[in-house]
Amino acid sequence: MYKAVILIGGPQKGTRFRPLSFDIPKPLFPVAGVPTIQHLIEACCAVPHMREILLIGFYQADDSINKFVTAMMKEHNISIRYLQEYTALGTAGGIYHFRDQIRSGDPEAFFLINGDVCGEFPLIEMTKFHKEKEGCITVLGTEATRQQSQQYGCIVEDKDTHMIVHYVEKPSTFVSPVINCGVYLCSLDIFYYLSTIFKQKQQEYYNSDEQPVDVSVGAKDCISLEQDVLSPLAGKRMVFVFHSTKWWSQIKTAGSAIYANRHYLDLYKTTHPNWLFKNSFDGPFIIGNVFIHPSASVHKTAHLGPNVSIGKNVVVGAGVRIKESIILGNATIHDHTLVLHSIIGWNSTVGTWARVEGTPCDPNPNKPFAKMENVPLFNNNGHLNPSITVLGCNVQVPPEVIVLNSIVLPHKDLSQSYKNEIIL
Image (cartoon, rainbow, N blue to C red; front, side):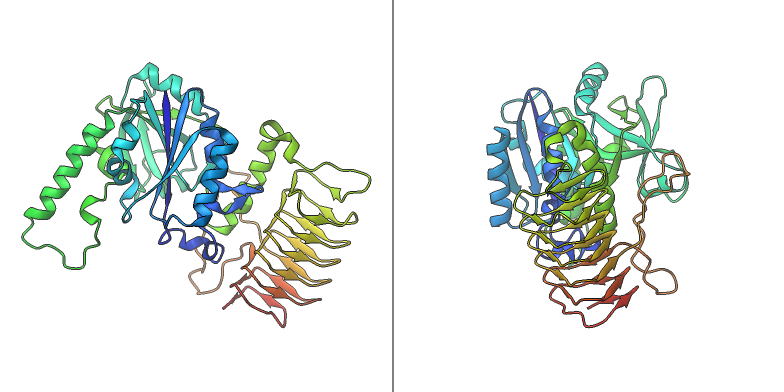
């Protein structure tokens, strides 16, 4: 019997995802038509003998989270619960805090997944590998370029046994091209080590002569899986790496959501072929993979695709062209509008003959193992780095206006064209 724990973070996280995370918790942001975290839940549900999925984070348990959890339980017929931390407890502090909930029922092992990763996860293969190695933690790893590997946790392994002999989180120099994917399979023995680490942190905090006055409430309870657990256990035959050559990425920025949207839509060919819209005599012209919510209204002369997701109650007018974009719920795209490499926010309106366009920030196709670049918002000269265009919720774009490589915050009525700007 297995369980799964998905770490969804909290409102202080996901700042690079703004303004899209202003209106909805980042894990509930729809990619390929469904919330990001739903893709992770579906991957976990595909594992045989999966009995329970626990979501751990420090978002307030509001209506949106409760409704989502209830809907997922009904759809997948599995126990799903949201456990709210009292503060941010790190990547391992949350599972130690809720250790009794995880250990109840005595599962053989449990998956631990960071909520901001996406991909085609070989979870079933990981369970077989974990049984063979009889270690404490199996880490899902993949390969990155030499330069990009320094942005992730780097793994040095024994090539014969796949035992992790050295682990460094975001090293300053090159260590290894094998990186941590943020997906783990843990035996219950991990709680023994977490207990030791927790007690040690408590002793250090209370025995210190100079206790920081402005320390956050949970600082002494915060445990990092990467630095407090993986690094010390490396080389002790306790942690192993399972390699994956399948697609994997992180969702840190709006640009990475467009990239994930493309790959999840392609994955639907095998997982949910009925979710992909097909060309028909009285429907819009479809190019490649396109998701259209059943409640959306799309004119038959519109051209959509490739890699487009249309949300709930969206209205797309005549002659509209949309490519490599996400159109969120209740948005209206008026006639003869062009939308490329963009995210159109909830309840936003784009006028007739307008053009909303961004710049794709995909991995370099000429570099093997290249990953998505989460570039900073501004370059060294203080200028906005070219990226996808994002319209926050309730944005009004008038007719015959161009919005290029820009970020528009919510509730803005544009009156002119913009290029490479943040409209506050």
